[in-house]
Image 1 (cartoon, rainbow, N blue to C red):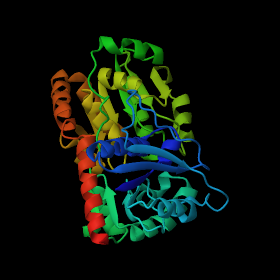
Image 2 (image 1 turned 90 degrees about the vertical axis):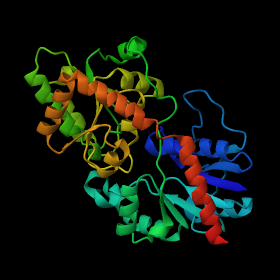
Image 3 (image 1 turned 180 degrees about the vertical axis):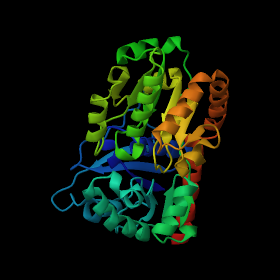
Image 4 (image 1 turned 90 degrees about the horizontal axis):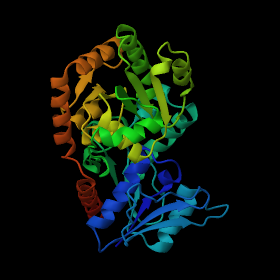
Length: 380
């Protein structure tokens, strides 16, 4: 049986959806060796990146395909992709990034990672919000099945997009296998190259308003002011996203600027070193569909402080300190309490490792294949 997956998230620096697409495709191919899988994107997009940080080869039944398109086919979802789907005879296409083909004959599964464009429109660029308002209800209606990463998003999709619950399946994601603890000594070289010392708080994620990093910056300024003798650093790792200028300006003018390290986008090896050596990992996001960074941090043995976003609380499952991240004072108090309490840090480190071990891409693939099977059964 031939399945297709959307590879357009792999045509740019890999972040949340890109990691999801790559890891899911690879795990699906391993879980179903008798089936064939294609990762599809049009030639009007930049070449996709199918390299993995651990150097592993793609399974033999997983094939990247850059589809040649002309003037008409450049309209990928309306023309180019449906024509390819029909020509190749795909049984099912999985839209891993909010879109599916509008025709072509294949069954369709749509992943909706979150509804932030609808529920937190103020944290996005207007053009992206307007597109989501047009496209998301249509995509949710035409897709045969919908996958969400958490029960929290599943409920939101049913409520706000008016989708029948029987059509929506919650399938959790996982941290990548490369994220596992390193000894503090092993992290020394990576930290030295990034200008990171031995005592630091870490935040990871694309720089965008929803991540609430301005509140974290204010909390860190409070900590630095109240603990002037401690050479604590705030390390923020992530590529520049939309509407990030106010955060960057706030960092540049911060009285604690000398203690703040902005690393930019990092590959997994450097991220693993930072996760494994931070005093605390903090994730103050106001809204998420899943939240991979806290799970990655837990997989490396970091104690985690997270905001009260419902999906994040669902994922961490009591293995993190949950705080009101809307208040920078509450965030500062929670971080100081954790930094000063080595016993709680050890407890959270062990709880996080145990919680992270419950997630795997193999499990994600098995559950996704079950959705594929049910979708094809319903299609007849």
